Amino acid sequence: MSFTSDIKKELFDVFPTSSHCMIAELSAYVNHLCVFNEDGRGGPAVFCSEDQRHIKRILRLLKSVLDIEADVRELKSGSFAAVIADPMNVLKLLTVTGVFQGFDSESPINPKTVRKDCCKGAYIRVAFLINGFITDPGKKYHLEFSYSDYSHAYGLKNLINSFAISAKIINRKNKSVIYLKDSEQISDLLGIVEAHIALLKLEEIKVFKEVRNNINRRVNCETYNSAKTAEASVREQNAIAFIIRSGAFSGLSPKLRETAQARLENPELSYAELGRLLDKPVGKSGVYHRLQNIVKIAEGLREEK
Image (cartoon, rainbow, N blue to C red; front, side, top):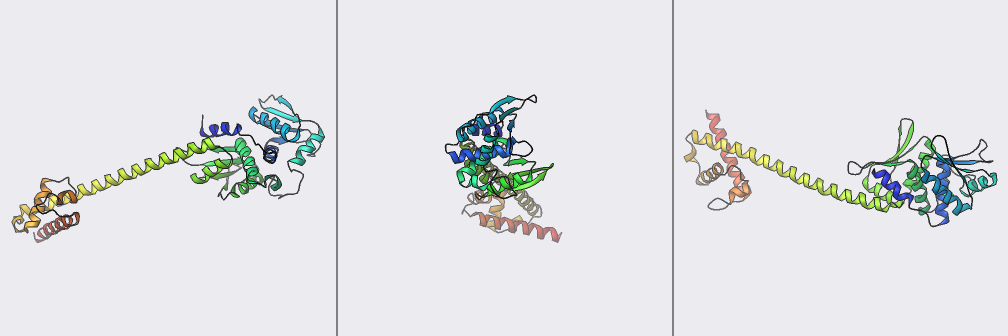
């Protein structure tokens, strides 16, 4: 199963305990899956989904919030439908979920049904169950909701951002896509919708990736330093060899001759390791400056020739 499927499986097991959160969830289902007749009020109201779990959840919400029974039908397309035929029950549904109340015309989400943070989380939970997607966090961090209706995307973005999360909208193939790419904000959203198991898994993956990246950085740093040491050693050995061929080695100071001899005998050692081999141990900086002087002397001899 994908990470998205795991989250949705977990969220289907999360059911609101308060009536106001049940109303928020039912409102989300009305805005996402419910179809009405032409005048929008007379009935029937039909909830349609290819996923039977949505229909079961809608039936439970209708019974818990409104004490309404809906007829379940399997359509020829393979989808499932929950049908409310009684016009009075349709009116009751739309009234309680806030469809008939005045609210921001730019969004179908009635702020009166999502006044509390828990209700906002309930609405977002249903939105994710229907339109949400998250990539495998082991590869990258990306969570999104996709809508054909910009106004709904706009309303959901604002609902998410009310939790100090910076969700954004882009247009993709005639769809309005709300997205998050920050791992911390994705974690926050999973907590808001009560996907606690998925949240823990995401945190584990984040810790693993951080440790792995730290190890990679350390290995890369050590590899880089080793390469620099080897490159410097070759340059120093070439300089010492040139001085010897030029007959100028004996003219070096005793300290430089000792350091040069140590480098020739130990080409793989770092400056600090080389300094510890000298009769009078010298620090890394001291060895570096001695060998730099030797390189400069070799360059001077080359120029003379």
